[in-house]
Image 1: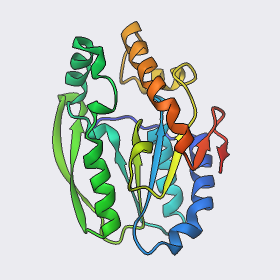
Image 2: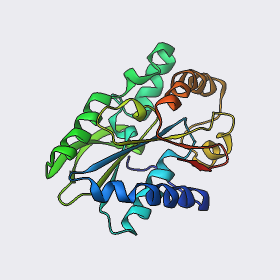
Image 3: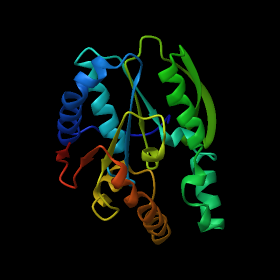
Image 4: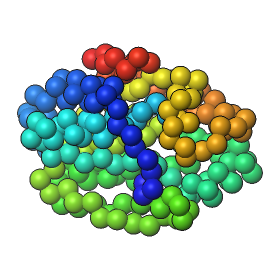
Length: 212
């Protein structure tokens, strides 16, 4: 998403290094693009961990790319917020073009050279399009709240931090005001996302320890 602020800190880097180390042999043995998802609640560090993992993999001579679920929302951010306020039942996986994101993971695994994907322009509240080159790619990472549910995935990473534990990170990111309505949205998301941990292959704890 254009305009997003991603601040990678030491604990993200350590987690990325640990995961890259654990997966490197599997990636080398894979004869196609290896796909990874990084999921968790808002502010849990999905974008930061995805970026740190990409950098850790590249340090091991793998070519990696990250897809952000935020680019696959049906509506751009401000319009989506209005839709939520008009009807709170809009909150959930139905807000996101998850099928399209899954199709892009499948396309990478099938060896396509490029994909055309949505690109959210945050400040302008609009969705554009961009081409992502996949030629020679070794690893494709998809990060976002609901990405554990995607099908075309080799390894699922889940960050086990709830909305109260992520308050500081959300405040630092500054993409949304901390207000009762937002906390209501996050509680709904929590009730959905917390169940996804059961499908995770790797769990990052609230203290950012990696459990393989």
